Length: 162
Image 1 (cartoon, rainbow, N blue to C red):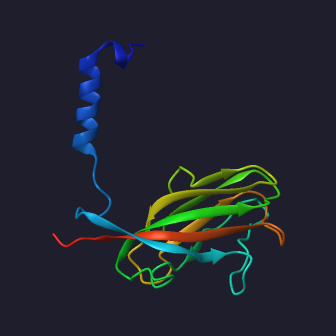
Image 2 (image 1 turned 180 degrees about the horizontal axis):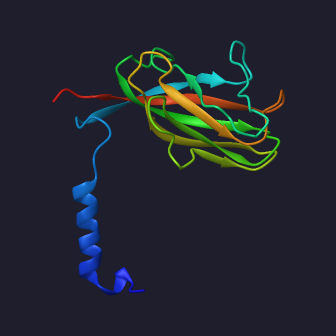
């Protein structure tokens, strides 16, 4: 099999095809970032937040939450800057955050091992709805009373007028 790195034209052709066929998923207008004081958006420890549940096969349905209107995040926000934390999971796994109206991506927002207390920051687009605009997917053994998921907002993005 021929390597792309040995033929610069092949590399350029592959890049050109990617650039031509790539279709943007979200709006084209530039966005501006607005930092906020870190604020708890979701915790599986707190009532009325209920634990993320698993069925007997180990599969976890996505849990949708409302971000817009919480913690000073306006209803026209297009993305969330966050820190997500797993606390003492019983088994290794991962968490994926994505817009609630999108197909879940094949990448994770946080990977963890059993017994970890681990966090990770990132930016995730928000769905267009005014409620249930973010989906949380937890893939691991069941979350019990001593383990949980925490999501803190650290900022948001808004589109600027063209």
